[in-house]
Length: 233
Image 1 (cartoon, one colour):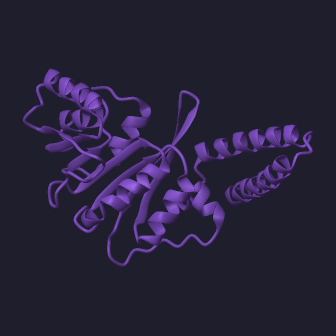
Image 2 (cartoon, one colour):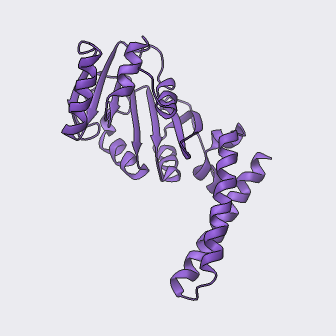
Image 3 (tube, helix red, strand yellow):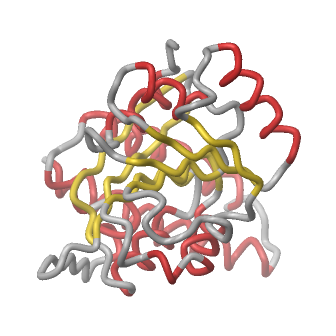
């Protein structure tokens, strides 16, 4: 199965030989691809909605992989038991929902050796949560697909590893991405700067109290953006 660039990048973060649980599996494309490629031997495709699970089940049946991929109705990680998987993929959702799913699955944290996370929003909140709960981001990359930017994180809870951010730009843009001078991140920062300046220019024409507060917020966001770009030069 040929994946989109985003899904292929997510799949590439899964360690060889893993037993995976794909949370919010939707069409089941990632588990199918990983089994077909021989990267994993068993997968659990999980979703809170029956519709996507039926689509995933149909795709799994079409590829003849019913014996390798189990389909399971579950609200996040709630129906996953310890030692059923050693790698969990959570992608295609907002950061706050991802944090909620991780919190609800607290009992599994120590039994899962690898986590592949790709939040679509609130990345700074996700990174802060991971730091506070002593997760460790080993790898991180940013890709662009159809005009949108996506970040993928490879996360563990290995003993002795720590990741301290300290500065807001590291939460917002990613310590690993900044350290590696990720070219896609640099492109993102340039476009974000243009967008923030455009909004700031429009709001500057308004004299409402709400506009004044938002102007100050935008100035702070621009300062963080500049700090991040300076960090990469």
